[in-house]
Amino acid sequence: AQSVTQPDIHITVSEGASLELRCNYSYGATPYLFWYVQSPGQGLQLLLKYFSGDTLVQGIKGFEAEFKRSQSSFNLRKPSVHWSDAAEYFCAVGLPNNAGNMLTFGGGTRLMVKP
Amino acid sequence: GAVVSQHPSWVICKSGTSVKIECRSLDFQATTMFWYRQFPKQSLMLMATSNEGSKATYEQGVEKDKFLINHASLTLSTLTVTSAHPEDSSFYICSAFRGSQGGSPLHFGNGTRLTVT
Image (cartoon, rainbow over all chains, first blue to last red):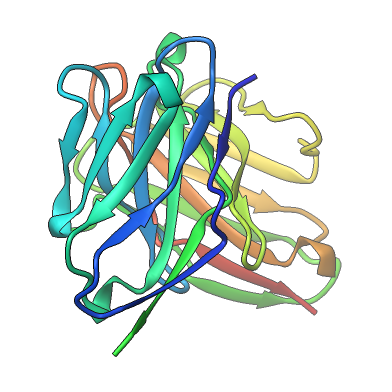
């Protein structure tokens, strides 16, 4: 069965600093990969997704993620964090054999931003 | 704007009563919707897949008689928590698949916080 690991439960960065959130997956082939953001008490908003092709994916709000097959990773990055980026971030995988829309989520990383 | 609407956003009910949560796709038809449950400070766990016009598919460990799912139309799925107990208190989130291509992203509702007293 597929699994998703987000090693960092909490991360604190200063506003303006760069950010990298880690995501590793376990699956026999290349799954569809997603990053979602969740503000407190809210649903999830899609930041970006990877299906195939260019391994560096650009998303909304200045986020990007890079798929590295050799490391089974899909880390999320942002060059300069804003206070409004404080939220919970979830990495997810979808399996191509079910159209990729049944998602398995990682445990989430809570991002806190220091002024 | 939001493409999936979930209602209510929060509900408090007494133990033993039933609660219905609605999930609507606003400007598209969703033959498949998904219901997730999220405990505080934890990730989302898929509860069931709601299929329009047929029975829902439940994940292992989810009681189908307790969490009734009805997907009566292409834009509406409902989750009814029957005979709710305090341990059912949680954040419930629905999502809908928009698109025909494999891997098209899911759109999520804003969730429903259920508190059972």
